[in-house]
Amino acid sequence: MTLLNAPAYDERREKLHRNLLIGTAVAIFLAIILCLAGFLLGHGWFFTNLPTEHRVNTFFDALEARDYAKAYGIYYNDPNWAQHPQQYSGYPLKRFTEDWTTESPVHAPITSHHVDISKTDGSGAFGTGIIVAVRLNLEKGIETPPGEEPNKRPGHKIFMYVTKSDGTMTWPAPHELGYN
Image 1 (tube, rainbow, N blue to C red):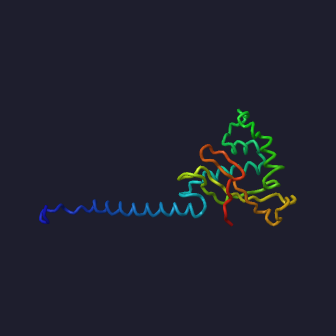
Image 2 (cartoon, rainbow, N blue to C red):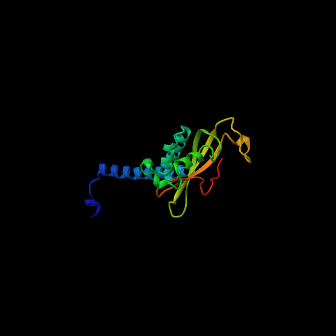
Image 3 (cartoon, helix red, strand yellow):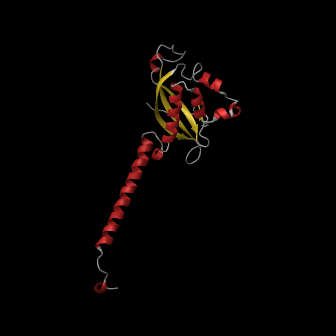
């Protein structure tokens, strides 16, 4: 093929080619922004930890409402736990209720909470679990437990660990996250 018999200029094809290049560049740019934003805001790469954060939020909503049976089902990732309570005889509902009321990690009824951040934890490329940091506000008028400063009660932080393989929760988490 020479210049004298070159194919005719196809404007539609050139516009399509240009638009595909621009679209690809924009998609790559947005993917990078989304990836970094999720990580920098503390919700995992591409915001992948948000479903787990939502489950932990629902768990604390149930604790605030004093619906311990629902919270127990969320804790074990088994909403039908009451149909087979023998599976959880090692940690029954009665003990769970005591642990989150009288023997609570915060030693006071929870009045409100906020899920702050989360971080993937464990071995492997995508980790084996997620640590979720929750800031709790507690009922006023409760005595401060020994060794705890009274001014730290309104923003008490706890860390829940959610296992990725089965969705169960554990408290306390194996690590605490450093953040303000």
